[in-house]
Length: 265
Image (spheres, rainbow, N blue to C red):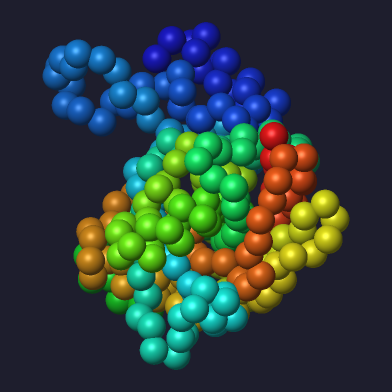
């Protein structure tokens, strides 16, 4: 990677130019040395708070319906439903710098665009069948994130018993703030999580109200997939998800992390 590319990308991060996917000027070196490829493949990074290092993103996992009230508003019974997960592409990441209101493009094909505020856990170790009591040892740090959703497309596909990836996995659908290492913030097992639109609180809960804790999510995920360093987990959203339109400003808050703010454009 050329030095001037590094400078340009880091300058964009500092300026809060979140509409640009991080790593857009950085090329992944994951292949074996000496292997020739016909084109470069970009690696996505998230800045690490208080460091000049960046967190390389391997996979984005998301858990569905992980707060009881939200599960009910989505038509599920939280007392009977086991955890389920879906994924977003890594280039769905839109970095949002602290103390900035970053433009977020209203996506195509939808007329019902929803917010979902979430705590995000970032892993620096991997494995299979990870015990719950060891799972938090795999967490490098935490960030504040949004799982943006084309709700009409999600529901339309769900009604047809088809995968609803189109409603969840699209460009810029995973806004996220910087990752704070556990050594600086400890683990988030309780505390206020909330989201407001244009200054009006829409979502508000306590992290302790998760049906499946972050540790349990890591353990359950590792039963189905081998986890690796670079995986991040969006840990679910509270009740009262709802639509936004162009011009709306979303502000997300978790006690202990800087606010995340975007403007729908």
